[in-house]
Image (cartoon, rainbow over all chains, first blue to last red):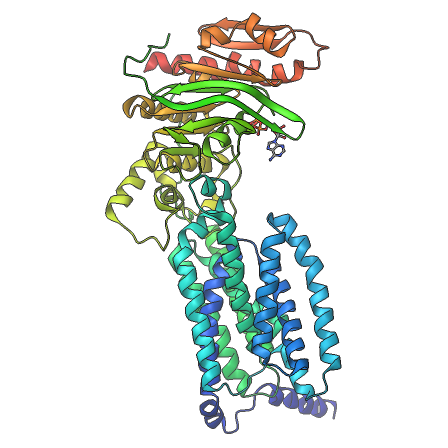
Length: 303
Length: 294
Ligand SMILES: Nc1ncnc2c1ncn2[C@@H]1O[C@H](COP(=O)(O)OP(=O)(O)OP(=O)(O)O)[C@@H](O)[C@H]1O
Ligand SMILES: [Mg+2]
């Protein structure tokens, strides 16, 4: 009897997570959205590299909350939600970049900004009287059918992000690793850091559309963090980072289509599993390899 | 002890009436100093006397409060390709996607736009630099996994990557073992001679480089003295600078500075610059032995 109930609820549970009825049709219907997810994966993989290098995880979270506030405000006012989230995230990114020159300072700026953004967002949403569905999806993400113009918007955003990051790749790496020497060499630290914040703002705003503002980290941080566990070659790290972001994003979407839950649990779970696997690989390797060294014997000091 | 340079002298770094202070704290003032191209110039002084800040002024990272400074004929500014910089040790981030050789490569083109594409000529230069600082063995190790001394050697290679006419080294030998102290100070000395490059070497411990140094800038308590090692490293001169009794002992061409009055507030800094124990039975003697073998 009890077994039966457990079995029933369990199967109910699974059927909530995975429903493969008329799956092919759905995929076809939402192929545009899946394409948009793939575009986001590229953005996440690229931007994540520098989020890790510059230790900006907290900033991503803060910007995402402000992006949510912006989207909620625009929803309330009856404007375009995407534009609202872009405005919110770019404005807050620039603010963080300007106020928090040093890393420790920027963390306190973000700490002050984030709850304020979230509070504003909740206020705007509670004042909004439209469909409740819209409210929740800003936080947890959704798959809507993406139309041509939205897809185009995402592709343009991705091209801007990737082109800008490619252009500043070397000096930004230098500035992130060793700011003082980089500045002595003529790298414009302040301008680069502001530019990166704007890029980050765009990336967050685009990601929020699909994964929601609470879970942007799963797209902008986890894949790169996982990549950095398994390689430290700059090029390989980037390739893995994009690859992991794609697997999480597109894989998560394909699974989400089969269920009735929001998309974000699927994306976050996949990206978390990849992260755990990479950590295991790194752990095993760390015990058995010389991490790239030639001879490992200590050199003898000539007496 | 140091042969004077027979070459035509030409100013490499020139400071006129320079003053530097942070708020009401004056590090030094009325500094008039001309360092010739090819000179090996040491900067000594206790903690907080403004040695690193002097290098930052040359780099254009910090501005003088008054006076002027010219570097290679033009006012000091960041991004001068003729200047290489080894900063005072600070650990590198642990999870950067960069291997030792990529880090050295930043010294060649880290300030340029775009992504670095592998280039045979550059790779050869990087290999040579890694070899020179004894880093070939860990060329492919992620920088975050390296020890402090290993990272320090990479910084030295990075600073030399562009063939700078001026090399600024801030405690470059710190945290290196004896073998590598010897190798690195020899490398910097050879670079100084072969390329006629100016070296400005900030250090607490003059003995490891004493045979290479042409002149010394000694900073203490907002005052300074400039001169050859023999001129500056004397009890009267340093006592005058510290305004307390300081004794300089010279043995075997090595210097030991001992603050005199134990109750004097400046005594701590006087002792600090010298590590008498270190020079007595550590570095000094090993150096002497090595030189004999060489
Ligand atoms: N940006 C700054 N603002 C305020 N004070 C500063 C600044 N930079 C340096 N100082 C102060 O100037 C003094 C000199 O610093 P500097 O780093 O040049 O010392 P140093 O001689 O290199 O000492 P050490 O031997 O410890 O390396 C210190 O007391 C420091 O606190
Ligand atoms: Mg210093």
